Image 1 (cartoon, helix red, strand yellow):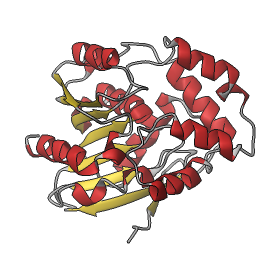
Image 2 (image 1 turned 30 degrees about the vertical axis):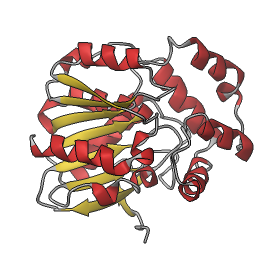
Image 3 (image 1 turned 90 degrees about the vertical axis):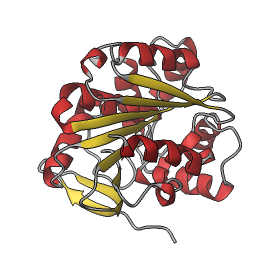
Image 4 (image 1 turned 45 degrees about the horizontal axis):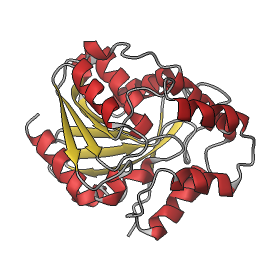
Amino acid sequence: MRQEPKVVELPNHLLIPFLEQGNRNGKVLVMLHGVADSCVAFEPMLPFLSDEFRSLAVTLRGHGDAGKPETGYSTMNFKEDLVLLFDEMGIEKAVLLGASSGGFPARSFAADYPERTEGLILLGSPASLGDKPGIVKVWNEVISLLTDPLDENFVRRFAQGLETGNIPSDFLEVMLKENLKAPARVWIETIRGIMNEPFPGSLGKIKSETLILWGDQDVIAAREDQEVLEKVIPNAQLKILSGLGHLLYWESPERVAEEINAFMRFK
């Protein structure tokens, strides 16, 4: 049975949906999704995360059923919301997990708030986007020109470009509905913000241990990106999962959760 997201109102009046499970007194894991997804993106993996931890899957502003201000979709905006979320929910420190582009606010938080970061996990997260000719081409010719209402066929093609074919079709339909909840301006501003993100930026300031999980069939986040992340982030370890693609936490949620559980236990 699917879990109904809870909702917290931040001091900036944004409503943020989240999924929560596990021991409220245990170590905290806060998970951030990628562009156009929502907390629902972590549903397949939640059953496999240990109940000894408090696991929170958060919907970022503008996405899913979260509040959708007219503007404010840069990495800094997402990071500032995360600080408010920690304060509002009484989270002193946590392990941050960023999936795909969710890695950008996760790693930015880890760099700027080391005292509140117990660890960092990146799942198929690119090192940068603005230096990728193929992505720049898609930005110029497609993403930057998006208007509301979004074309469902575009959103479906976008999602299919991330898949390796090992994901249940019913869950893909659930996520398609979530993707369509993000207005065009959210897609545009979020991706523009990521493309303008400097690299390596403040990554050298990250003090916590970092686990980089990457599937060797990933066609979005290249192996070279993972290797450079491992190099520039102190105390980072790259672990390659064979046979998995960009959405590794959908393709093999149990396998990815095992890696996360092991990392959490040694924090």
